[in-house]
Image (cartoon, rainbow, N blue to C red; front, side, top):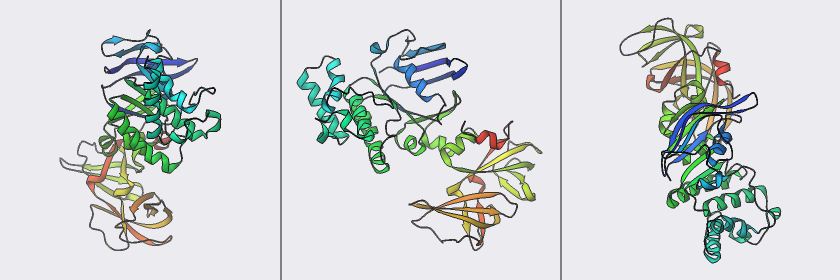
Length: 368
């Protein structure tokens, strides 16, 4: 499958601008995840690639070939929608075999491909059932199997694991990536689930309000997000508002509310510049003894959340700000109680500094 390119593509629905002059590329064989909240334009993007919609502005390319006016059936792409779109009068096996048959495979070959794919999604035992006899999660797995069995070069997945229970979703996300890579597909996978995107993607593209905010490898997106919204979406960061107090060639000091000084590695700041300090939750340490870290603050535990493999503490600092610390249970040093006085610390290297957003921090963090 050739490279998929968008060049200044926009799409409107009446007065709503669903995509706003976006440009990106998906390479041959790449697994690209499009991550964003509801209403960010993710499904519109998939439908444009599939040929189910036409852009109002800009050009979509498959390789060097413009495809704005190429019909869906001529794009060598298969679209797996959220609504499953199964044929109610066909059995599960027949639904999955539909793609291979449409590509002129002999019936015995198509059925063999369908059977093999159903085994991959753990539904071979329901091969003779009809869609109406399946749960929503099973129907979603059938739709996914039909897409995989189609042998198209481009697989377009719209929330493919959204209707599955948590255990099966975890299992299938890894299997899905493995199947896509083994089959040589190029995959564009839309999701609002951060963990899902991090698990399967070669690259993640973050959409908000029809615009691309960031695009890069999962590791880069997580450790060096380009903005406050992305940092919050993928990392669950703590944010503190402050003013740059001093700056040198190696570091800066930022004064947050209550006169607390935070030392950072960011040297390209300007004195008196308003900024946002971001620290990921797992990089925040708490202790009932002295911490040997670059920044140590005092606070009180106000809430404890048990999250299975980890525990999250919400701590109110002496200035009234609240920060969260996530501790993984394996190797956790201590357990802290609500009301306990603690030290809160993090190093300079764990801080990302962002310019203060024009509309304020609260507005910048809003999902819609």
